Image 1: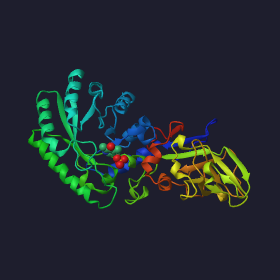
Image 2: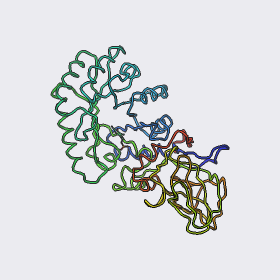
Image 3: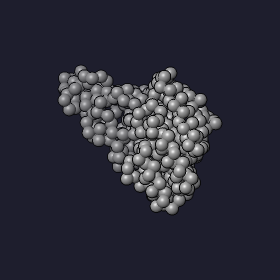
Image 4: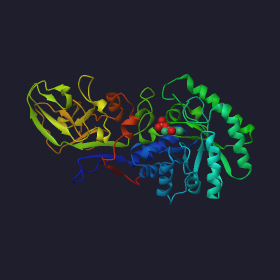
Amino acid sequence: MTIPPFAAGTTARAVVDLAAVTHNVRALRGHAPTAAVMAVVKADGYGHGMLPVARAALAGGASWLGVATAEEALALRAGLRDVDVPLLVWLLAPGAPFAALVAADVDVTVAAPWSVDEVAAGARAAGRPARVHVKVDTGLSRNGVAPAALPDVARRLADLEAAGTVQVVGLMSHLAAADEPGHPSVDRQATAFAAATDVLHEAGLRPSVRHLANSAATLTRPDLHLDLVRPGISVYGFSPGPLLGTPGDFGLRPAMTLQARLAQVKDVPAGEGVSYGHLYTTPRDTRVGLVPLGYGDGIPRHASGGTAGPGGPVAVGSGDAARVLRVVGRVCMDQMVLDLGPDAVEREGDVVTLFGASDGVADGATVPNAQDWADAAGTISYEIVTRLGARVPRVHVHEGDHE
Ligand SMILES: *Cc1c(COP(=O)(O)O)cnc(C)c1O
């Protein structure tokens, strides 16, 4: 990736390489050659920017797009008016705008018995049949029709289908632990999914799009690819779980690079406490650098450096001076501190990289990745990229550049 120079007036930014998204979707198609790929772009494309990511994913061969909420689905359809692609939304609560979703040609999910009536009312209001995916709970115990309730839901949907009010096009479920190699729940859920398929068939429904696989199952369980896979995190170039492998193991390239300019560099004598609570004390006369990013930008406060362990990693310098430092002291709302060392050559305005690609910055140092930040904060890479705040501008590069 070619990282553009910092724009004037920018103090922090997330560079999103759309060619990496396109590349990743292509790689995912290679992992699941017999299934269609639905790129999951919920939560603003896991923090990367929903619309640019959606277009880059389509360029890589995704033939469906999936989101969680009705608002996301409607915004996605509105932003992709020039594109004919099926969209699916799966997390709806009573009162959701079913009529608007059906009118916008968004496939809706029946994930609980209450939604059958609301979908039907929405279809009548929209004046066209609702395209429905039944979401069954096969063992996640989160959203999805409970197996005990499925026969009744299937019967009611079959009646509505016969009346021309709905069209049941899909059956889906979601896995609880596919990111843990060999977890026994995966096979149990696959068996429950087959049973749910039988229940729909017995009701006379013939969903042609059956889908179960998230990123982890797309990458590691070809037997679960079915008609469609629903990768999310892997579209953005991250591994769904460190135990399964690295992005490189799966042919994936992280798309996001998070950078900031040092806002201040100054000398601090030995023995001084640094940042709120003085979790860190300078062990010698040194020089500290101020990074203008904090939890107000989505940087986890749990990645503070001090008594609880090393802070989040940041690549600084270039050439011979390139190195990876750890945040010292508390991550604050807007800022955090690096101990650059007594001989530091960094200056105010220098660019530091929290995670992502190494091009053009910190040459010679191994730039940290979002998984390193997840490890420092006790979370997963999903949360690191998705929580990145609105205050950090996303700079999309390689748009329409499909290698
Ligand atoms: C978020 C989500 C996905 C994508 O999961 P990843 O682990 O990011 O691949 C797929 N399906 C459903 C129902 C989801 O909610």
